[in-house]
Length: 163
Image (tube, rainbow, N blue to C red; front, side, top):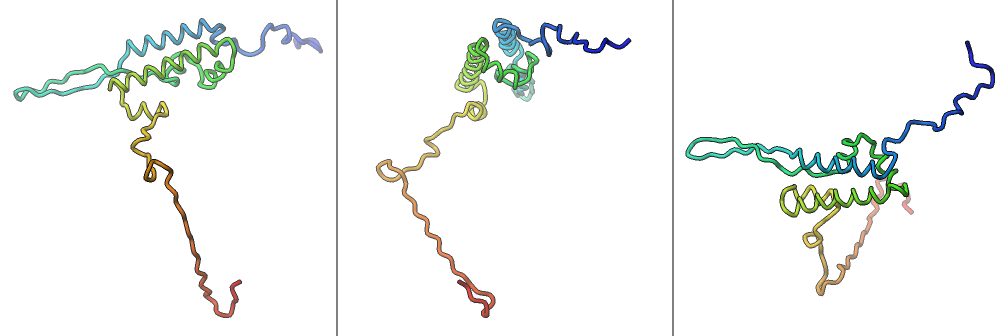
């Protein structure tokens, strides 16, 4: 039986759309702490081979796993755009900022201790070595450059005048 004309039952809902996965900043923080613990408990493994007196031994060595926002989003099952929207939400912005600082610090310290690839982490963090790329004029001033371009027109058709 069809609903009576003018039925607005859908308006009786207290909320439209799906419920948020994290209804409070505390829930988000707990999920982020779970990710931090998972990263610590699940290092990457590197296979190393050693040779001693002609005998080759294979050893698996744990390697530090770098924390990332992408990894966090996958772990807590949210889209990256959802994470970005938390940054703009007054209640969640402090948690997002704290988590981003923790992740940045973990990568920086891991690279500084040579536990992570420093070149990859430096690029990820937006760091660069200015000394290797810096050029200056004598006395440390800016280099002055001058470009001069001259053009020579060649007329392929002698009957056509070039202006």
